[in-house]
Image (cartoon, rainbow over all chains, first blue to last red; front, side, top):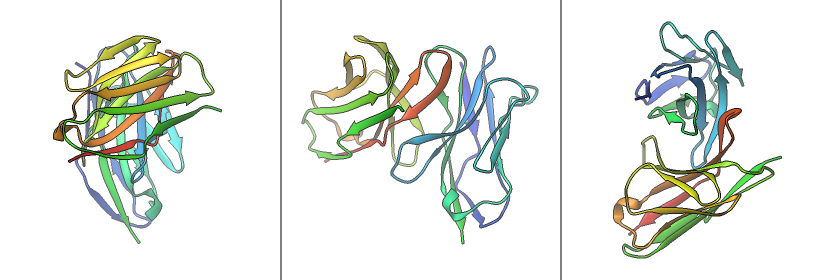
Length: 111
Length: 113
């Protein structure tokens, strides 16, 4: 079945460091890919998305490129801030009504 | 604009007691609705989803049930809570098939004692 694999956390970085959170997927068909972010005690928010191969989603300084050849959708940010501390979820949907989520990666950013 | 509400925000219930969590969506019609559970430090587990009034799909057999009595209302229930039902419950909605992203509510923190 369809699945999403994310790098295990937690990831701890100093402010202004470069961030990469790896995400790979297995899916039949042509999925749409998403990154969601969850701040402490809150629900998830959509961070960015890409709906076809080679699309780049971007938002708030975060970017991810849909790589069909490597079945990956890695999240990157050039300079993280303390306020980026959160849990990040990679997800996919291949049609229908169900989204498949990864296990989440917790990010801690130190001042 | 669309908004999604969940209540209560937090709940402490004894084992064996009933449960009712409510979720409502405003500003859209005929949304797809979802209930997820998130155990401490873990990912999301899809519990139920609904594509229309009275239509409920269950993903995981368990102690919980869901109902959709109105187009924009989704209720999660249990007749007798178990300790293992503790967790963070999230409701979400999405629009048809054209826009696949999901929009999440603020969640309910349930502690079963």
